[in-house]
Length: 86
Image (cartoon, rainbow, N blue to C red; front, top):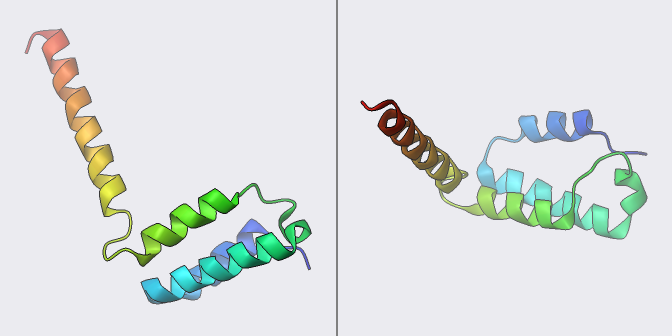
């Protein structure tokens, strides 16, 4: 059986808690390591799995990433305002 993106997303959506999601990602990572041909049509690396697992195991998943994005947007808007002379 070949894994597709749709199957992965569908199964991931069914999971309720963050530890369940992290466990599912660990299982997918192990499957990719043992049987890479199953993932031949999906471009995801072991490093990507590790990053996702780390985020879903954290107390507030993606909080750091969202804060970095918000900070960057705020800096960019201040820079734009300074260029306009506001």
